[in-house]
Length: 283
Image 1 (cartoon, rainbow, N blue to C red):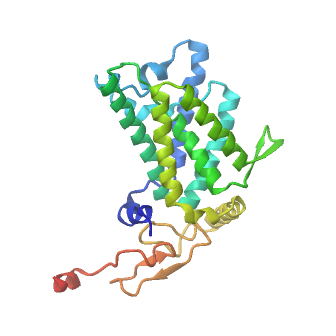
Image 2 (image 1 turned 180 degrees about the vertical axis):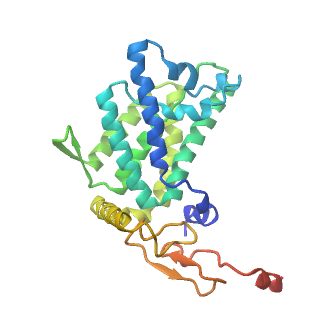
Image 3 (image 1 turned 60 degrees about the vertical axis):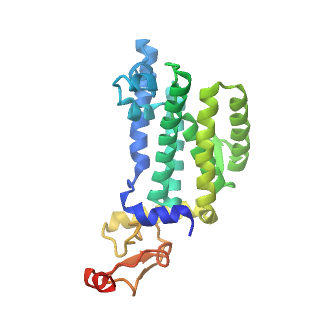
C-alpha cells in the first residue's frame, strides 16, 4: 500500500465527486472572458481575477480561486477543442484513479502554484508575478499519456498520433520553456512536474487499464444509470459503487462490527470498524 492509498483511507470521504465538471464550468467562464477581450479591449481576467500575490495581499483574496479560470487561447474554436479534450482526459483519469486521487492531484497542483507564487513574491518583492493553471493542465496531459501511452489522438479529426509521441513533444516543449522562460515560468514548471512525478509513482498499478476498457466502462455506467439509479454495492472507504466501475469486486469484512462493504482496492487495507463497547473493553 503506497502513500496515496494511505491518504485515501483517511480522507477519501472528503473527495469532491465529478470534480472535472466543476473545472470545466470554471474554464467556460474563463473562455467567455477571454473571447470578450477581442470585443471590449479590456482584460477583465488579468485585471481582477488572475493570481497575483501583490493584489491578494491587498485584499483581493478571490484571486486565489478565480485564477483557475485561465484559458490557453482566445480562439473560440480552439478553446472548444481544448475544453472537450481536457474534459475527456479528466473524466478518464477520474475513472482510473478514483475521485480522491484525482482531487488530490488537482488541489496539490493548485496549492503548489499558489505557494510558489507567494514565495517568489516575498523573495523578489516584484508586484507583477502572475501564475495560472497552464502547466498544471500540461501535467494532466502527461499523466494521461503515462496511463495510456498507446492511445490515439486525431488532429482535426483526421491525423492520428499516439499519445506517447505527444508526450515526447510536450517534454521537449517543457524543456525549451524552462530554458527560455523567466523565474516565474521555471518555478511553475518545477511545481507541476513534481506533482506529476509523485502521482506517477503512486498510481503505477492503474496503468494496466486501456482507453478501450474505460470506454466499455463508461458505456456500461450510462446504461445502468439510465435503467436504475440505485446501487447494490458501495465501498465504505472510497464510496465507489458498481456504477463507477463494473470491474470492481465488493466483499463484506468479517472483522468489522456491522455490515461494512469494501471494494477490492480497500478490502485488505481498510481500518476495521469496531463498536464503542469493544473499543472500551480493549482499553
